[in-house]
Image (cartoon, rainbow, N blue to C red; front, side, top):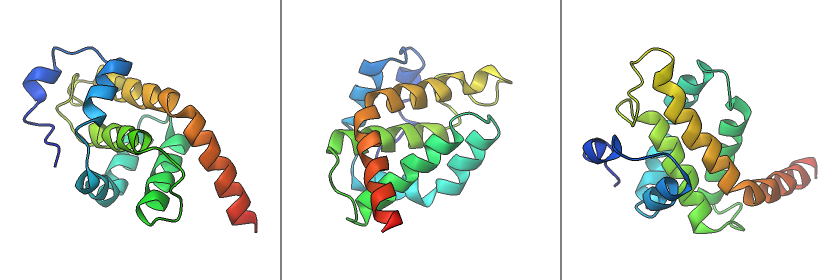
Length: 137
C-alpha cells in the first residue's frame, strides 16, 4: 500500500504538475482503491469545507466504486490509479502544503484534483455518458 507519510520529505520538494501525478499513480494498487473507498466520507468532508470540486469528487468516487464492483470497466487502469492517488492525496494532512496552514493548506489539494480531472477528462466524460444511460434505463 502506498505510504504518503514516508514520502513526505521527498514530496515537499516536488512541483505539482502532470508528471507528479503520473509518477505517483504508478505506485497505486488495488489495496489503495480499497483505502480510498473506505475513507470516502473523510475525503468528501475535507473538500466540502473548500466548496470546490464537490460534484467532481462524488463522480470520481462513483467511477471508482463502479470499477471496483466491475459494473464499469471501460476505463484504463492509469485513469483509475490517477483517481485513487488524487483521492488519497486529499486524505493526507502532511502533503506538499500541510493542511493545517490556513487557506493555502488546500491549494495543493485543489491542484492535484484539478490536474487529475484534466488528465482523465475523456474517460470521465465517457463514464458520465455511460452512467446516464444505465441509470435512466
